[in-house]
Structure formats: structure tokens, C-alpha cells
Amino acid sequence: MPKCYTRLKRVSEGGPYAAIYDLSTVTGTTLSVDLVRSYARRPPSIPLRKTHVVVGKEPHIYGFARIFQMCREFWAATNLKFVHSLDEAYEMVGVGPEDFTQRLFPKIYGT
Image 1 (cartoon, rainbow, N blue to C red):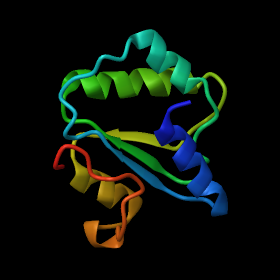
Image 2 (cartoon, rainbow, N blue to C red):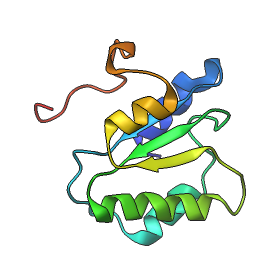
Image 3 (cartoon, rainbow, N blue to C red):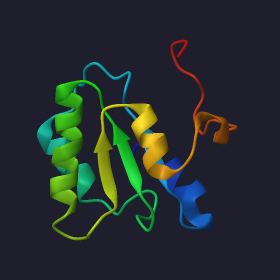
């Protein structure tokens, strides 16, 4: 299992959390549509009791996220939303950048 999925699953055990998946700086991917579908069929890493928002600026990244959502809906209703900017995600979840005090993952490539 990918490290991201495993770590999110571990840290989310304490309660119902909202989530923002910021893919706004992602410009390309090597993932196949079949792999995205297989990820969607897994139990969610963070339980979907609260709103989860995926931010995708690039049309193909946004599209992959929507494919993920469509494949997930076959087994569970979700609070999964999609937006094109991080500001929209903050508004939807009711938080701001100042509400995030630490990273779950280290910075990579100077981002």
C-alpha cells in the first residue's frame, strides 16, 4: 500500500476529520485510469463522515479525481467534493491556511 494511504489511515483513527487533498501543483501523472479505479475501491484512508475536498487545477488531474469519485460511489455515498483552487477548499471545509500547523509528510523537491 502507498505510504500516503497508510499514514493517513493511521493518523485519522482519532475521530471524524474533514480533509483537503491539494493537487493544485500537480501538472502530470503516470497513473493509469485502471490504477485510479483500483484506489477508489479501497476503504477510504480518512473516514468520509465529514467533507473531503480535492483541489485540482489541471483539467486532466481534476478529471482523474472525478473518475476516482465515480468509482467510489458504487459502494458508499461520500462527502467528496472537487474544486479548482485551494481557497475554495478552505471555504468549503471552514478553515484557513493558518489552521494547519504541521505537515504529515516532509517537504519534497523544495515545495
